[in-house]
Amino acid sequence: MKIHEFTMAPNPRRVRIFLAEKGITVPYEQVDLMTAKNRAPEFLAKNPMGGVPVLELDDGSFIAESVAICRYFETLHPEPRLMGGPDAKDAATVEMWQRRMEFQILGTVAGCFRNTSPFFKGRITQVAEWGEVCRRDALKRLEWLDSELANRQFVAGDRFTIADITALVGIDFGRMVDIKIAPGLKNLERWYDAVSSRPSAKA
Image 1 (tube, helix red, strand yellow):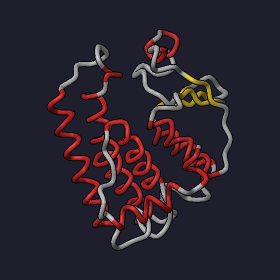
Image 2 (cartoon, rainbow, N blue to C red):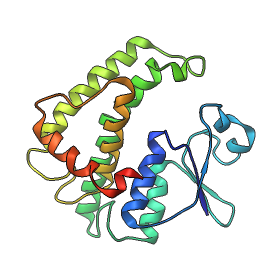
Image 3 (spheres, helix red, strand yellow):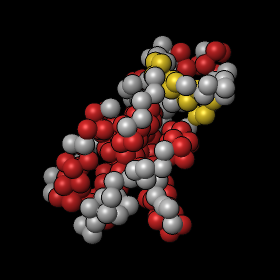
């Protein structure tokens, strides 16, 4: 078993933090996105979408998409429960907030990066105007998250979950395009200080 990843990319970091929280060690093999190794035929045979991370199992099969990989390990090693449960309401609540962090925080930051970063120039069709729309949306979503965190310690409730991992990764990735927590967002700052100081955040 091993995980194909690229250390600088946000989605592989989600998996690394998740596994670190569970105390699970898996070998990593780097796929250099800078030289488009993820678009080479041998990698596309593992994941036709060309994205990282990809979990390669001992039977030769592959699981792509970061949350799917996290789900695989959550099923094998349910404690600590990072994806909610065991009751249905808790599992659904964590999934709800995970999806919100994925679309509203990480997704808007990624949209800005894809459409404004020189990294993607010539690789995809960039729309600079849309990148700036994503930037403004991301900053608004951080304000919204600040208001939500006025009522609870973590994103999905009273304990650390995958929703916090996704939000942390999205906010940290925002630095690549100058999207930062604005001064005065005290609830978000309090939350960020707490989650970014966890040992897993260094994974």
